[in-house]
Image (cartoon, rainbow, N blue to C red; front, side, top):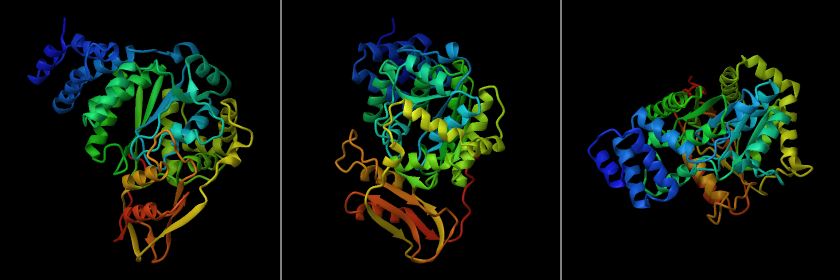
Length: 421
């Protein structure tokens, strides 16, 4: 029988782990037979030595099997899942799912909360008064039957081994290990049981991995390991070297998604939405063009779909009008003329995260705190021009200073492509 000492010694020697050894690690995480010290040593060894594709696949499958598997497609029929690696001002999930559902491609997504500088879909949706996001399998199937879409937070039975390992990764500085990231994401995605998954992998300094090579390695790993585990997948590489949409803020981004579905969409945001919809629809057995996306939006069907879904999930009457902005406004203006040469998107995301959690309590979020991003990389700027408008509860100086420092005005530059497929 594989023991923690034997497995860790094998990794120290640089030897490949067998299937049984990988599964023994995960079983030990799930049942408590591996201590935090043992698991921390495994995570550090995996981060430093790396895990090959076979080891990563077995890690994914073992964490998947440690908990509940919903197997939704087996009962409901073809449906797709969509996952983003996280960004700033990223409302793609709130837009894509109702667009796909309105086009006849059912879609479901178990979502998470904010992580570091990136905003979580769950936090955004919880700005809707009364909305209940907790989902179990039966409730998810019911939403799919009624609306062709379901979004929510999974029960604790999904991938419990990953939950323990994830907590230790943060404490052992192994969060950025690509094989561990792939295994963690997929163990939860595959538990849903969609017939295909499309990944929106963010590039640029606001992405999970700022390095372009790491980003492509992550994208490739998500697609290949998902396929190796039996679920076809595809990916979109989208730019996060600046906020994606016009708004950053939980309630503001829900409002932006509604405005987008109502026909007032930011062009950069549309590029990502169209690319994700096209690949997701193909995984769902249909072809969807840019014109199809435009037609669904123009019909009003997707906007109504999102509203009806929220109502069914418990949103209070008049919830759209309750998506308020914080009352104190401040602006960030250009100190000089030139061009917007660079944006530290991660810095903006971190500053916003601090502003909406003024007491550092992650369970208490001020959903009304927001900023409107009014410029784009490469744009000509005049001295004194408004670049960003802030909406906060109290003294805006800290957020104002951080956002100003994140915007570099200098020489003319060409903005990176919004989507690099």
